[in-house]
Length: 87
Image (cartoon, rainbow, N blue to C red; front, side):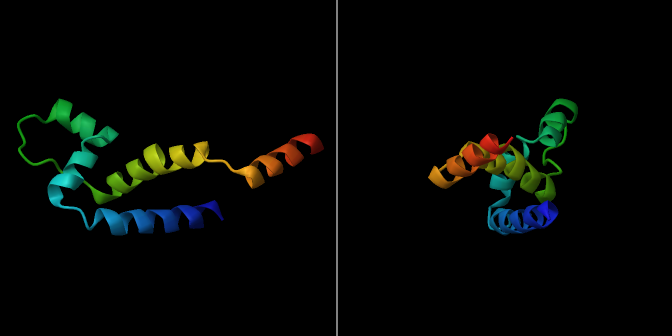
């Protein structure tokens, strides 16, 4: 079931990424592991071989999931409190 959530999230992120200008996509891609490795290994190439899939994965894992993990509200706290008291 979690895969379905990730697929939906990826589709939404991809729709936004595809609206970006190429230089904006490259700027984000250069922050990915692949982009950082390219910067180190391939200084002689002018245009990086960026990938929208790598951009989507980076945004999802390094930004969206990180923010979601920090989000809370009263209902979440109540749920966690109830789950802890049952253990």
